[in-house]
Image (cartoon, rainbow, N blue to C red; front, side, top):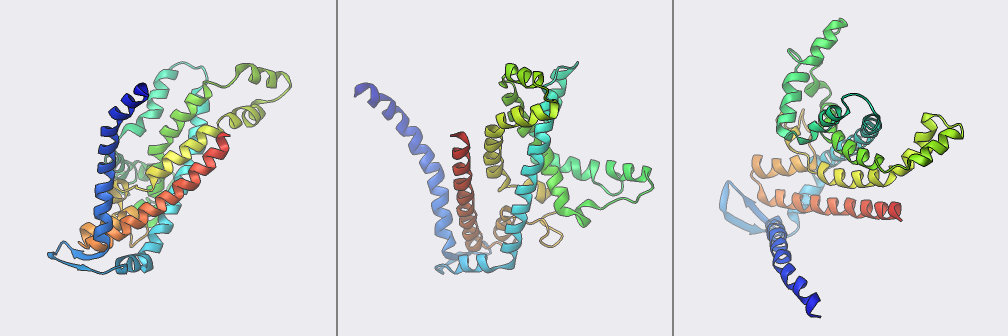
Amino acid sequence: MRSNLIPKLTSYPTITLLFIWMAVPLGMTIYFSFLRYSLMYPDVREFTGLLNYEYFLTDFAFLEALWNTFVLVFSVLIFSIIFGTGFAVLLNQNFFGRGLARVLAIAPFFIMPTVSALIWKNLFMNPVSGLFAWLLSLFGLGPIDWFTHVPMISIIIIVSWQWTPFATLILLTSLQSVDKDQLEAVKLDGANSFQAFRYVILPHLSRPIAIIILIETIFLLTIFAEIFVTTTGGPGLATTNLAFLVFTEALLKFDIGIASAGGVVVVILANIAAFFLVKMIGKNLQ
């Protein structure tokens, strides 16, 4: 009993600190979500019940932001897993300069989102001096104003470029544990490289892919910097996701009550998504 008591007592301060760290902001958010409270009139606080939730959930911007969030998360997951798998398989081969290639392939993940968005906005997607405009001019084509004509595709490209290295890193690590004897046996049976990948490597990657989906989904639901730097949620609501919508209500419209209600709704939706993802991963790991 004494040996079990000491670890528990030493862990209580950390658990208490984490609980306060999470519970206090969440409690304040829930408290403000029931008030009519604006930063323009900080002395006026009026209890409104569920009125803020009703306004937020029935607002057309919420449905648009919810759809944009789904499109962004789903698209980035698809691109990061497909390209991450391809890069992981390529980087797992033996070739000269493999170490340097691995470092360069993983490097974008460590770039700050704001810096990454600025690089894409000014160096690649600029319709006047961007790299893509120059490449299109070589084929006699006019430049594309990416953030005006295809804003959501532009955001998906930027975020996918950031998160593909993460998927590559996880999958490359998993490929190190593939049974070499099994691969050799499959090839001796007459299987080509595609068949070996489909029937041996891909099933081996199912668990890390499930973990990638869970981790990336949690972070992709809160994408903000890339949108703020490039499109500021526009044109109109074309690239406004739930995180940016809450920011708009809080720091552009100064309505803390509605923004808090939106924050609570986003937390609930994120937990629902996490619950189903954890269930899916649990079945995959059994």
